Image (cartoon, rainbow, N blue to C red; front, top):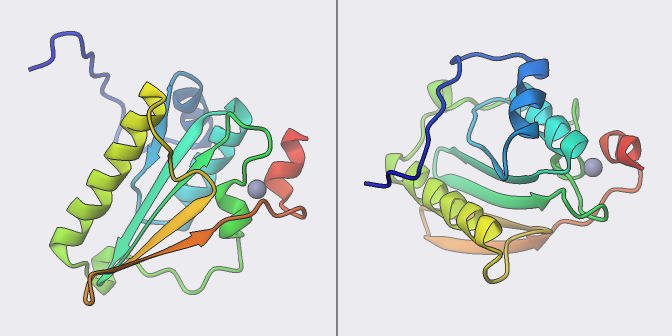
Length: 157
Ligand SMILES: [Zn+2]
């Protein structure tokens, strides 16, 4: 449908060094993974290269979407919001299940934010976290401040 679009296939599993390399070559990074280790590795790569990160998560009937515009040196990062080691027991979709339409809602919201970031259109979710309760179909919005004690942000100065 879009002959100007080039798709580059990468291995299904990559390490932190490859994640950093991929982030360096991207305009926008979307994190759609299902575990905190990968989320933090993707965040570190985006912080390192100053790339906007569109983060999405879905488990059971709960969804989240946030944008960390790391091209802005004052932006919070994923670690500012969800520090490593202080997360609750990891809830994987494989064991906890996910309401199937929820991944579509979260994914479409991430795609909208990515396109807005690329086009420079509108107001992105930068600095904000959207939380969806799909049982009530209720969205809440929370401000995400930069954590002055964040060790990942400290490395970028
Ligand atoms: Zn941070």
